[in-house]
Amino acid sequence: MQSGAATALAALTSTELGILDGATVTTAELNLLDGVTATTAELNTLDGVTATAAEINLLDGVTASTAELNLLDGVTATTAEINTLDGITANTTELNQLDGITVSTSFSNSTTQLPTSSAINSFVTNLLDALGGFVAIADDQSFPTTNPDPSDNAGTVVSIADAGGLVIDASGETTTGRTTGGATVTITGFPAVYQSSTLPAGLGIQVQTTTTLNTYTYHKSLPTDADIAQLNDDVNDFFARYRIGATNPTTDLDEGDLFYNTTDDQLLIWDGSAWSQAYVRTAIENVVEDTTPQLGGNLDVNGNQITSASNGNVVINPNGTGTIDLQAETDLNSNKLVNVTDPTAAQDGATKNYVDTTTTANPIYAAVAGDNFTGTISATERTITASDFDLSTGNYWTCGAIAIPNPTNQTAGTAGLIRVTAAPTSFGSHFDFPGGSYTAPTAFPAVVPFFVQASGTILLGNFVEGIA
Image 1: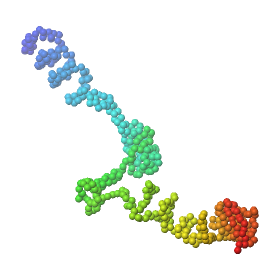
Image 2: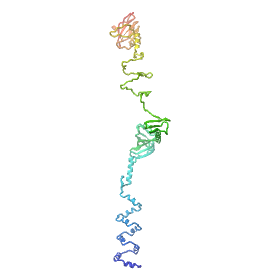
Image 3: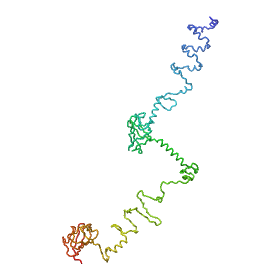
Image 4: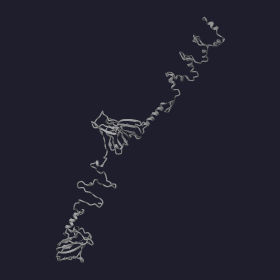
């Protein structure tokens, strides 16, 4: 027995010795306590512990304080659950971010839920379906062989960089597009501006899918890069040409520049040396300003007059052989027609001079009831031939021994005389004779009167023979 051992054993109480009663610990196990400085109270903490040596050895080297170890007091987690944390490098702050967070199978705007990957996938898919999707292709011969819509449905936009060459019919439909596999592509709904035409090279358009494979509807056309560049140049040129301000500019001036002066409310133009008022009219303001006016339709005087000022004449002057065509009765309102030429045709109006001159040389006045007629009535005597006996040319006729034909232009009421220088051989069938038959005259000249009773019936009188 080592020195001091006896003294140590002598110091043990009967209670402490009783604890060792039945102990089966080996010398090696007791040596584990060699150098232990734990108090009796600390050692009593292990009283009833069932942990194995291996389990207790897990604490070997642990630097956690009593307070930290006490955090595990009452923990019911299994070894497997605690092992789940094995290898985690997150700090307390990072782990606390999960405090109160739950996992959700739906996508919402909640700040206390984390959506699952399935929920995120469903959300993105629904979003793409709502947007319709977008597919870009090079030209109208490069359509995909399958429906580009994610749901094989309508609504996905297909953007065609160059649709030049598509032939659009009069109804706004084309079937000249092709898939990359060579199948026919039908596009409907082109607006009127593209109907019955072929799209120019370089023009881009967008179409939308339908539920029918390889059938699309027109969406809109896309400007070319050249169009955008031209528009940009036009806008910049306008900005350079047109300015607005309270005072006229004095720098950066080019001939043709426009400036609106807000002080004077005037639009000015720079002529190369000075500003002058620019006045652009879109239409004439007074009829007198149009030196070559033309009517676009019928002129309705609307109850007014076509008149003149300062005793000026109203001249109606047709061009060339044109005439003034009056298509209704003309009321001269008790005024005269002046400077009229003499008539030449049957239906021409006669001037006073023409009537006076003609009737003086060849009086044709007919007496009216109560008038006294003096002077001589004379008329032209015309010769009857086998082909000429026209009663519209006169009433007095002469002939010799010929067959007198039926006259033309027989008008009921016409009367006249026929002077014969020899007995006519016969008369036309329209003539009716006194007593019913023709009796030839024997003394000449002889005169016989006639009267047109009706067209086709001419009454012939008795011959007055031997007129000297």
